[in-house]
Amino acid sequence: MKQIGRASVAAILLVVALCCASFVGAQKQSPDDLISKARNAVSPSLMGPHHLEAQVTVVTGEKKDKGTYVLDWAATDRFREEIHLPGYDEIKVVSGTTLYRKRSADYIPARVFQLEELMNPTAALDQFQRNVARLMDDAKSDPPHGEPAVVPPLTASRNRIGKNEAECIALGLTIPQECVDAKHGWPLEVTEDMPDIDETLEFSDYSSIGGAHVSRRRRYLENGVVIIEAQIKKLFPVSQFDASTFAAPADAQQAAWCSGMMPPLREAIKAPASVSEDDFPETEVLYGLVGADGTLRRYNVIESAGPKADAAMQTLADSIHFVPATCGGKPVVSETKFAVSDMDFLPPVAEASVPVAGKDGFGNPTCQLCPVPPYTHDGFEAGIQGAVVLSAVIGQDGRAHYVRILKRLGHGLDEHAARYVKNTWRLIPARGPDGKPTAVRMMVKVKYDLGSSSSSHSA
Image (cartoon, rainbow, N blue to C red; front, side, top):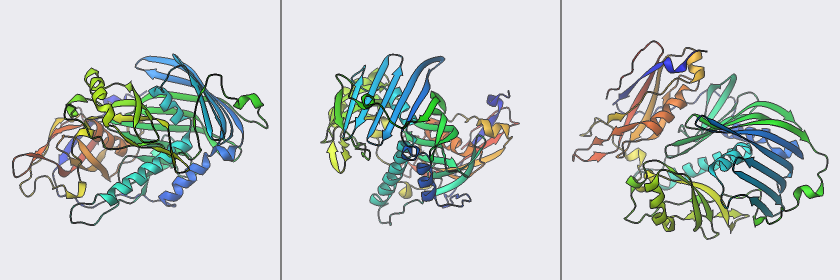
């Protein structure tokens, strides 16, 4: 097998005036139609009552632990879910408006959150739509001073994922993004972003049951690294379940439930002076129990950013609030996963009001840590060479914000380059006419070259 790592990439920062170019690939259906088609294609309601069993592999470095996932589904408000992983067991039963949950810990570990997302593609598609709506609302509510609000359009572009022709849908941004099979509408990838982390759900090996389509092979990736794999081993319709299937487990905890529950949304953190961005060298991921009033009743660190961040969270906890989860418009107690990073303590960057690098007395950022992104498997196998052109705001924090794709190569190279620049690159920020660090807009050119034996960066 060819070694992808041997391919090299030259990445060059182009300091030029930022044009208003955007890329919209050829498509036969609107992005909204593609999203609706994807959701309908995998709807469990079309499948009818069914039983599903999957073998689960949780990857930690070189270690691979085995587990199982079992689902008995009768309706959106009547199902039983069992998860058994090394060191953790859970039974969840939904009956009408009540959720019964019995588990071996008093919080939900990160891998369980991720597995539940992976096994519920309709929820992942709903979350994508909520994130898009939130980004649209943000653009409307916070326009540049003295300028009208400009909401980026929802666009679809052609790509190739494995052997599938795909339509990838995004809101003028690289992330969040949803890619569906161009012919059938089946979800292939759903990518969401947290600070420093891209979470990607991959779905493949589809088969049909009833009127729906089911991905028998699924993967959960963080920044391109496989964290969880699930392989469906049994899947069949059920004419009638035994009454005991949906009985509440002994000693189970109870919570409100509705199929259309809106999850809680973390609000901006108003941190005390004793906590700063320096306390969070990486993103800290947490479990949270959120009250109907939006307060954080309890939290557990489920992916630590280090002892300093763990200690800072003890001071910060009372400053974290949510828009509470709702069922039928009524606030309810809920459990959630949320993140805290250094980005929460930096002033927001308003994209359209940011000056262009190298003009009107504004300097240019310089690379401090700009590693080259490796080839994707498809891009390397296809022998693709050329340049992906991105636009970005390089903030005072030296990170790339508002990364957009202006020129594409396909084969997954475009999105991969954009995510890599956004999540990995660190630059020395430009300075303004006053000599102080400032955010600037610029273009970034990532050049893929199979024949090059070295890589270079210049600004």
